[in-house]
Length: 285
Image 1 (cartoon, helix red, strand yellow):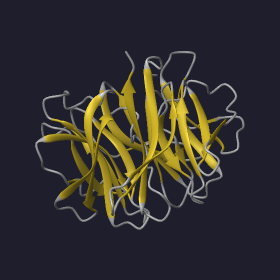
Image 2: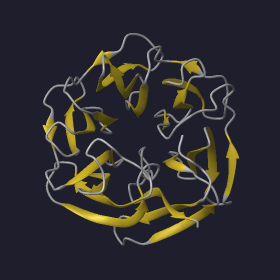
Image 3: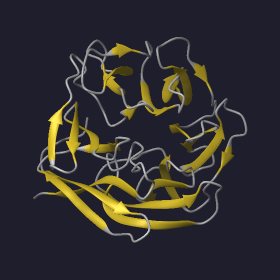
Image 4: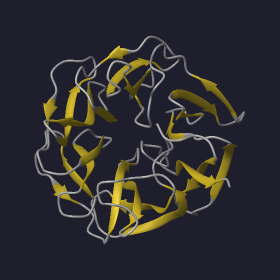
């Protein structure tokens, strides 16, 4: 988990057409990675290892009880029916991240990935499969596993980092980011791992592609080329949120902000595909 003191976090939304930003709340500590619930009323975020729900209309936060899973990072994902939450929790035994699920209203976590480290990113639209980044044999690749647990399936096998796997709304593709061509770029593959295709080609490092619920656009975060190593996505950098057509092509910059790690690690599209939620930051002297 990142250091929480000395920072102000701003939970924001942006209208993808007008570009208008709205600050929903500010926190004098670190919060990260908002997920939007399917009813459009709540955002789920993490802070200091715990998971919270934020009521947008009331502007209030409530901790989601998660028993022993109190070392969660910013890799939380909602099940398609919004009844369960999957998290990456750093287990007490060895400190490595493993994936667990528990009821969205709170409850006892169920282990999904016995092996670590495993970093969750996607839940298939049919609710049956989780996609994640995992280090196995010294290499970070993309894997899938049944959401109820079982045998994992390796989808990528390249030196360097493959990360951020997330399903398209129709379940046909998994979007991800990969450093295999030098800089971190956005890629797409069939859900079975075939047809791995590079989708961005600009001179920057791009992470965490999130497909809009209507399947038309992809949002992602970009670091300046010289600011970070291609395989790193640190906090407290000047970054951009970009949009591109889900078929590829030119991007447009939606927001420039101070952020990075924690800003948009997980899918934070509004259910109507009209807004994105994200977190920006301010360092306090």
